[in-house]
Structure formats: C-alpha cells, structure tokens
Image 1 (cartoon, rainbow over the protein chains, first blue to last red):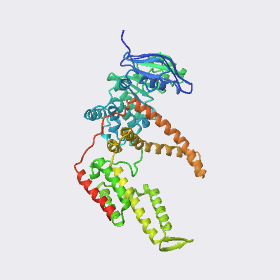
Image 2 (image 1 turned 180 degrees about the vertical axis):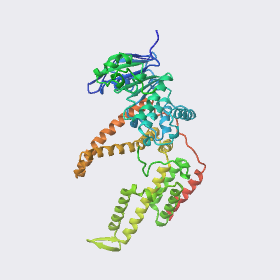
Image 3 (image 1 turned 135 degrees about the vertical axis):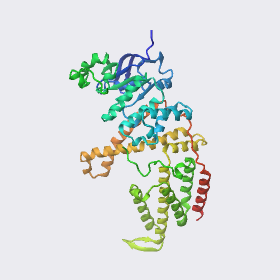
Image 4 (image 1 turned 90 degrees about the vertical axis):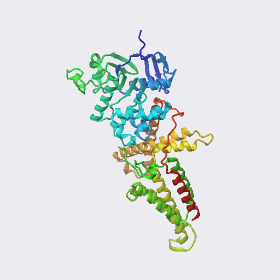
Length: 251
Length: 251
C-alpha cells in the first residue's frame, strides 16, 4: 500500500487555558494534492496547519511525514513543509528582499555561494529580482506576500501551507498570488490552503476539507461539497450560487 | 508603503557605501569618543569632513533637518541649561537668572559636539545596511568571552527591522483613537496609557508570530557566516580616521 505524504492520527490540541483547539483529527494527504481547509474564524484551521511542521505540539495523536514522525527530524520536516503565514509583515526578518529570502538557507548552514545562486533564481521566478536591494518595509502588500512565498520556496519544500493567502490583498494582488499557487501545484508540489473565503481558489482545488469547532466535518471533492459550505458559515462562491457551478477566476 | 526616515539606509555607490562596515563602525565609535575632548577648531574640522561625505552621498541634510526637530529642540535646551548653570561673567540677567559668557561658550561647544555625533550617526545609518551592521557586531563580539555574538547580532537586526513596524502600529493606534475623538483628552499621562496598552498588545502578538515564522524556517543560532566586502580603501580610511581622532583629542 502507498504511504501517504502526511498522515495524521487522532490529533488533539488543547491550549494552556484549557480550550480545545482541534479534536480527533484523522487525515491522509497524498503527493500533488491541492487542498482547501475551510472553516469560519476560530474553527481550528490555523491550529491544525501549525501542527504539520511542528510549530505546535499536539496534546495527543501522531503526525508522520513519509512514514516518519515529524518530531524525529524537525528541521527536515520544516524544510519539506513550508508555511506562509497570514500576516506577511510579522514574518519578514531580513532588512532587504535578498536577505529575507536567504534567511532559511542561512539557518540550514548552506554554503554562501549556493545561497546567492538559489536566492537569485527564486527571486527571478517570482519576478522580484529588481527589488532585491529594497527594504521589505517599503513593498506593497502583494509584493510582501510574494516575498514570504520566496522565503519558503528557496528551501525547496514538497508541501506548502498557506494561511489565508488572499487576506488584505487587492484584486491584482490576489490574481498574482493565485497564479503562483497554480504554478506551484503544476510543478508537482502539494498545496494546502487554509481559508474562509475560497472564491478565487476553489476551481483549482482537488479536495475540500471543512472544519467546525476543531473537528473535520466534511472531506471530499469541491464540486460535491460546494453547496454545503454555507451550513458551516463559509460563503458559497458566486458562480455556484448563480447556478454556473465552480468557475475559475483565471482562464 | 513605509516612509523613509533620515536614518533609513539609502542605496548608493559613494565612498562610504562601499567601505567595509567594520571599518566604518570602529571609526564611528572612535571619533564619537574622541569628540568629547575636542575644542571648537577640531569640531569644525570634523563637521567639514562630514559635509564632504554628505555631498559625496548626495544627501541634502538641510532638506531633511525637519526630521531632527526634537533633537534640535533638545540641543537648544542643553545650550540654555549650560548657559545659566555655569558660573562666570554675566552677559545679561533675567528674573535673577544670569546667562554667563563661560556658560554660553561651554553650551555651544557641548551642543556642537552632540550635533556632530548625530550627523556622523546619520551618515553611518544611511550608508550602512542593517544586515551589514549585524554582521559587524557579530564579528566584533566574536573574541569577547561569554557573549553569544550570534544571538546579540540577530537581536540587533530584529530590533532594526521591527522598529518601523512598531512605529506604524503606534500611528494606527493613535489614528484609531483620534477617529473616536481621543485627542480631546489633554491629559498626557492618560494619552500615553491609552496608546501604550494596545501597542504593547500588538507588539507581543507580532513578536509571537515572528517567533513562529522564524521557527518555521528552521531558525538556528549556528547559521551560515556573514560575508564582508572590502573596497580596498579601508587602510586609507583607517589612517585618516586615526589622524582625525588625534586632532579631536589634541586641538
């Protein structure tokens, strides 16, 4: 039997004040899936994805990456499972675009020459190379989000977790991030997007997981679940509401 | 987009931009210490040297002086306090307080010394990338026993990176309070308390998110060593800096 890329068994997490973040999560994620993790605010999406790369420790349960517990080699898990946070401002560490992208590789003690080459390659891929000497503080919201993606891509992850990737972005910014998400998925990476508004991405997803009160309530192909979204406090995409099914934002 | 301040690094190709950061940092520390022994003649010599470098960096200091309004006010207060506090020949007396000739001379000398240090600091910060400063601190602290130089360097770098973010958050909090007529309350203590509590809360949340983001990118103190770029003019600058420091102490 094929081993799933990520396997989660009976995962529970309680916060220090006793409130329960997630309960009894069982999930298998295969390579090249494009998953939307949907749910209203406070449903446990962020808490769940923060367990994927060991940022949060479960109260009970197990998470494996390629059959091995992620805590066996946490640095390997964090290299293979990249995570883009909701607020780009608070995850930017470097004082230039170049330094920000180089941060992850420097932590892995990679040779300086390789870092320079790899960072430039990723900056070119995301069309940020002309900004390499700029201070991240002076970038627009969309550019900051792209920079956060570049900082993860440089570490060559197999799985990328996005926490609300379109929040606070204007229409061109949303389209540009959407294009990157589609390209990353087409290049063979597994994409997991935690979102409460899935208008832009639902057409590209291969699987939809709906969460409520820290539990997984529904799991299946988006076309089968789209009509149930509003029952869980998630907006149904306009095209589906109007009876046109799930339509992509981009042709 | 964040605003550029007088202390923000500006990209350039001037002599100081190309100079190795360690050389600049050592000379800045040396001249800042020596200037407290300097008299008017050597302070003016230092100011001329600084004006040359400002022109070389194509920075119009006069245009940017508004950013130093509070510092200039502090200098005026220092001058007044020295003028009235130092005993000597009275120039004029107002409400039984005598302004003395010796006090004015001493005040002017003290103010000119502080002003010169500020100018040198501005020149240093606009020609030095914060990342280079971090690298220089790490290099200079390396031989010091019991000092975790890498941790100190990262802390300095993070402080420099997050200062604009904290200032922006402070502006947002202040604007939100003004929008609810918070400016009608003239009590400065209440104003500070109302500003600082939400600002501290926001800062702690940002720090928490930053810690997660750094962990997600495998943050480790044992990182790739920084690299330094020598311009070839460091020897000449170092000799020039030593001569200037000697002049400051002797004349």
